[in-house]
Length: 135
Image 1 (cartoon, rainbow, N blue to C red):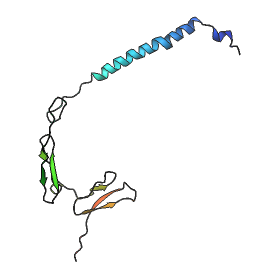
Image 2 (cartoon, one colour):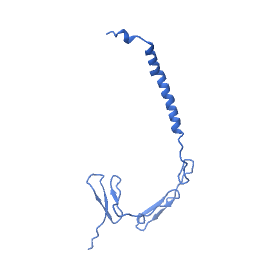
Image 3 (tube, rainbow, N blue to C red):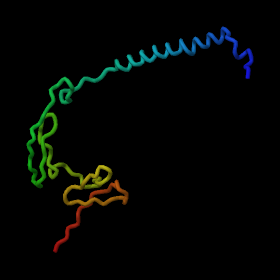
Image 4 (cartoon, rainbow, N blue to C red):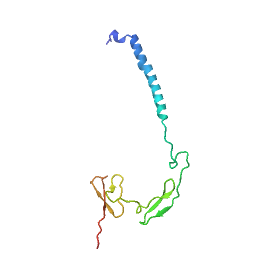
């Protein structure tokens, strides 16, 4: 099948169109991309405070001591000052509408049971005070 001569003839317009599409446009896009990359890399980053560990600071290593809490659980050292974390029994608790269960499996504190809102595997619920029974 032969194409008409109008489709196979190279005209000055077709040469200009090819120059723009295959040479000029890619070069312009490359220059634009380089200037954009330079602009986003020069965005000012706020200076880190002394409590944030940066790669230039020495890493902090805490000792592996543990503190026994009144409820019998143990806590270790953490944070930039290597202080003992709060005991679960001494941590502030809000008994109203505490979330439990869910995909993270968040437990209720001692003396509370988790009342689940559904029967699906990652169901979440609310911590409810355990009913005490006397014998």
